[in-house]
Image (cartoon, rainbow, N blue to C red; front, side, top):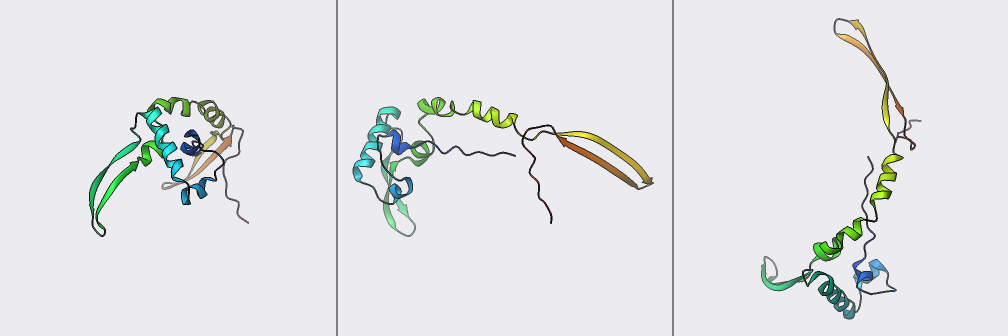
Length: 139
């Protein structure tokens, strides 16, 4: 089974921030970068990527405020208006992946009765696809 996580979207780059190292940026970056992201979210998502600050009683910290950039709406997913453009890059590539996948087919199945309670079953599979199936080799 192939599984893919497409991780090419970059909110930072979409907001017009250039020449950054992704992980390092999360450790430390100028406040101006946050403002660029907020302005970009306001322009393409009508501010829906921003959660208004609200009070919250934390069990250990007491009174705090929560809010800011909505991680799921802004960081993980593109705004709904840009979703089609984002996912439109992949159908042709994913179809190609499926077409070259291993395609196991039953070549032969036989069952021979050994006695009243026992059968010898033979199942032969073949791969008619391009890629080989995953296998574990024993030494």
